[in-house]
Image (cartoon, rainbow, N blue to C red; front, side, top):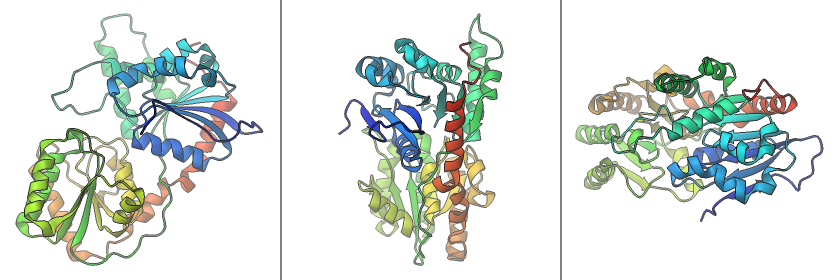
Length: 392
């Protein structure tokens, strides 16, 4: 069970020569937690004090985190830090108003996502507030770091469009300011042992994403249906984070696989991470049908552990996966995307194991051993000097 907030300190408070960093995660979803815990684990020369709020009640969390923290954690927030690092869901402008001591700290915002680029389902309540919080927090920060170029570019384009729609009194040059202090540094992967050999057919195919509309369940259903109709030697493992409500396609998938059990693998959330990693280490292929993806940690982690990735030719996938692993992107035509995936899977079934292990080497450039020096240098440079600030 989550508490209302969590607090972690990386040591007993001794300062020494280490950079003292206050790290805030306002909506601590799995990818944010993975990044946050990785920082503390792989940068032992940095003294992190962490605050994290549970990933529920999104509309309240993104607007209310400053209120929650300012009155419940004031003493901790006012300690002697050299740097403030916050995720993009932190309402930084309000938090600095509530806790003036934070206004003097050099500040880095890390953007796992941005609220400008989410596809809509047609059922949500449209509110500018999440986008405004993202924008104001970025404008308050000295540095803005994104996990992909796609995330950065869609954020800047979305901010420009929002500012154009406002009626008056909009200062000029805001997006140019943001672009000038923005950079890209991905969420690093935990290192993994060299991939193990896989057994032969059937190919074990993993789909390991949140069970929500933006992860493309229509294309996933079409893929499984076409694979079953063609009698392909494939076994599908449909796993990932679930919620109280899931798109109707998942119930249709469950019924389809129940009717064809030789195509059915694991289904639903996997409670133990060890069991999840064991699945990745024996599977052949990891697929994505996502209509939005800011980095693609789930696919990257599976590829590092020996799965060949099969991802759409769009979004952040173009940055992190070679063209050979991307299928043609037609997000509004799920049957067509499914056919493209089926053709790639047929080719893999015919050529395995010649293709095995090819992606793992490419993913090692995104592991903590490869990226820790960049993170260490970034934090040290931010803490060492107050960069030009939008507040001045």
